Length: 362
Figure 1 (cartoon, rainbow, N blue to C red):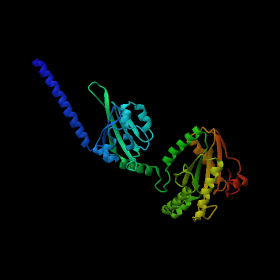
Figure 2: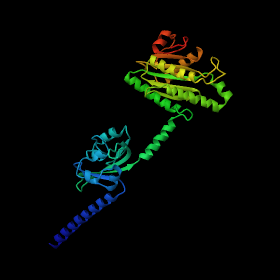
Figure 3: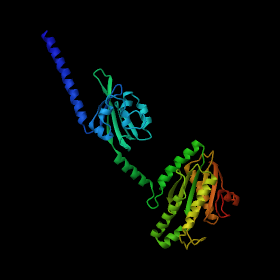
Figure 4: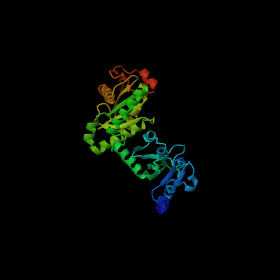
């Protein structure tokens, strides 16, 4: 009997200690400087600490006992990380966060980064989240805890640095590395969607003697003006210009057919011609002019980005051999077929609304 009483008394003390420990843990989390909330097994909010209130703008009294915690982060119903942990939907976590951030899980816990809408704040935040299950003594999952970190400032700085790293320092256009990556993506996308893709290669005529005579500062200013003219000639959101190298530029025109490519090429050439930048070294004009070559990868084109560049380069050299200050566009339906030998007719030029030299080829 005495032994039983001792045992019973020890069990009661253990339960009491656990209760005190549970209360202490809750008190710590409530005062923790890390935004934290806990979902019970039925996905109702059982804890929403002060730091979470400050981060989200949502008060604990408005979410405790409800399943409305998602409203603090999104404008439409979407599970939070703790919801997915409770439901063991780890594959869904990858799908939900693959495009907007990153996700990793191991040992039952999950870590993610993503942009959240934050409706109460009226501005998005880039949040890092960690969620883990909570088990009882029998091993049953009884809750999930999620902690948050605001990485918005760091993400914005990273994005700015990445953006700067993608641009050419002189012209502000995409640099060569970014151009190569973008063109590879667009070639794949065009092939999958069976849509045309046009690439223009743009070269400043007789630039070397101009640069040698005037010096790099004047030459750089000329290239900046040309870059602005090229950018100003692009009217569609998907069109992108890059500095390919030296005095050569490139323009990617997703979805553009031959006529569309001709329109853009001639708009670029005429804009630069209108700048009237004096160039006494030009063999064909008293001002800076451009030669433009391009290729339209039509339906059935299964070549690489490198192949498209090579075909466009060939048309650029054709334009230069034909007298410079003109445009030459080829159409390539497959990787092995390029149609660029035809002389461009005045009828096609008129149909495009262009004012091009009759001797230019297309």
